[in-house]
Amino acid sequence: MEEHCCIYCGDQEDISRCLKCDEAWLCPTHKEPHCGAGEGECAPFKVEQDEKSGRYLVATRDIEKGSVILRDKASVLGPMITKTKLACLNCLATEGLRPCSKCKWPVCSSECEDGMWHQMECGVLSQSEAEPSISYDKDSFHLYPCVVPLRLLLLRDNNPSAWRVIDTFMDHNDQRDTDNQAWKLHELLVRNFVQKYLKLPFSDDEVRRAIGIIRTNTVKLEQPKTGGEGVAMFPTYSYANHRCQCNTFTRKVGHTLELVAQIDIRRGEEISTRYTTPQLGSYQRIQDIQKTWHFVCQCPRCLDPSEFGSMMSAVKCERCDAGYLLPRLPTVIGSPWRCGGCGKVVGVSAIQGKLKGVLDVIAENRNEDNQSLLKVISLLEDSLHPNHYLILGIKEIIIQRLMRSIVSSKSKKVSDENVIEDLKLRTKLFSHLAGVLKMVDSKGTNWEQRLESFQMEEKEIVLRISSQG
Image (cartoon, rainbow, N blue to C red):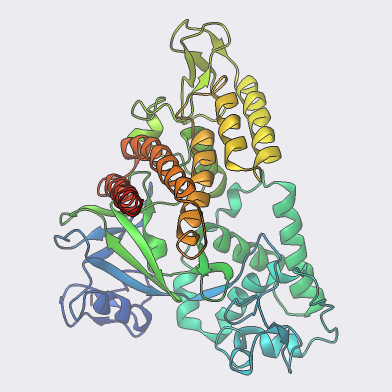
């Protein structure tokens, strides 16, 4: 008799053939995401696996641009694991916090006290002999980074079917010998919290695996209505692999994530997502990918030292006036850098030292006014290419400020001259930003459309002000 297993997690318990496509075998956990993502149709993807890429998503039919490929509900979510800001343990709200009547940890209402997320740990926390020493006049509590790892550990007994899926995820623990001190302290904190503070029977290896799974597979979750932020794990979405120029984008609605086709995707093509922002130059992006997800991205952008001619990581050569230094082997973190003008070669330590100085300048001036930041940009262009991602980052800060200023000017008494000045500066800065990013970003992104909308808004407001004058 032929044995079958779930196409997602490999589970062989209670599996059944998909009634819609008659091809896939599904466990109870994956029956809904497989058949429910396509508005009553069988979902347009399957999970495949190989030694090089692990598990990944493949289109089972042609998918049109704008189509929702999957809708995924969070299996685990909670406060940030690298920050300790106080928030409601159920909805992540940061206002109106009070102690839960059972466990004494922060919640914002009686509804959240009995909410599904807080209930994951409330009973365990309530049984602890020690009450949390939380000061509500402060905005942090040192044990908050332990909440999500605890929830993941408890999932094994509280929701075995969800845990079976998550247990298939990579943790990269065999590659974490180079963890920085902060991550080592985080693991020690979680172990002490789980084993000594709560006296739960989880081993060091189980705690370490939970942290590894979280670090590898969670995404940032922002709650605009409540002002909170955290991390969440979306089980099916986690199977989508990274490409710097991917063919999808994500949309988060509450605790649900939607994966949407950014371009037309043909049957048999891999469905990819992106782990990093396109605004990062290869110098930083490649390091982040290798240190966090432990693979070397071989996409065309990463393999091209100039990043399609954008020069987003280029550093000015000190020997000649016209040349810029770029890595000779961009996917090798310690690669030497070479000037495209005079051919000078320098070690990566020289580049690291120069960029550290740049980052120090940015940190010192980040909160200065827009004109001061524009002067910083002029200063940095003496050592970096004008398209360098650190310079673009400063321009993004200014653009965000200008957008807020323009919106607030509609309800405040702001001179017409200042409004027009803000509009023109925003368009100028965004025009440069969009021009660079459309060179390196995925197909189907809307940088040009956003620029056109800024230009149209500027034109309309200028015309209105002129007619009123």
